Amino acid sequence: MTRIKKTMTLAAAGILAVSLAGCASSGGGDRKAAKNGYKTQKVVYHMNDINWGYRGLRNMKNHLNALGDKNLEAVMVFHSSGGFILVDGKKDKKGHAFGDQIQSLANRGVKFALCANTVRGKKIPKDKINLNAEIVPSGVAEVAELQHNGYVYVKP
Image (cartoon, rainbow, N blue to C red; front, top):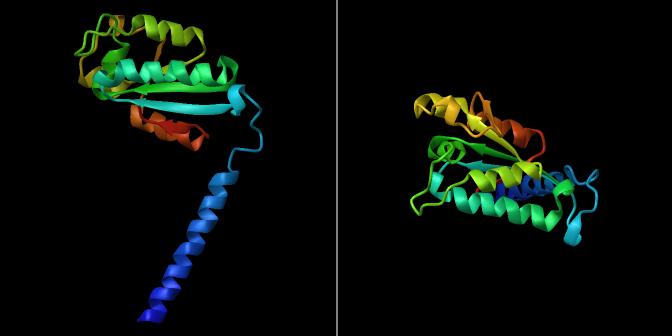
């Protein structure tokens, strides 16, 4: 039994080493220098709670400030109660509105994706959706697709 455990442990360690080596080498070759010692980045922020909206939008602003606007390709994907962040006039439980922050980030190149399932399920009026938002068929599928396309996942 000990021999089998040792063999399995060594096999698992080998698989882990190969996986980590693949992660370390993926996407790094074509990245250019950015500000503050960073390199260019592609990132997707997953926003599914209206009460994390203010913090998530602030995190994005700080991310842009750290790298520089031209060095960050950023998409924020909204679904569930997070979808209301992109609804004009909505506020979180602390009274924060989001329209000005969204416009400021959009002016800096951030893209905003809103889940169509959320729009339907939460009965969000389309004329109240922030004009910077693009409606996508599924928020979670959008997050997964972006990850497959080399975007790093961030959950504020």
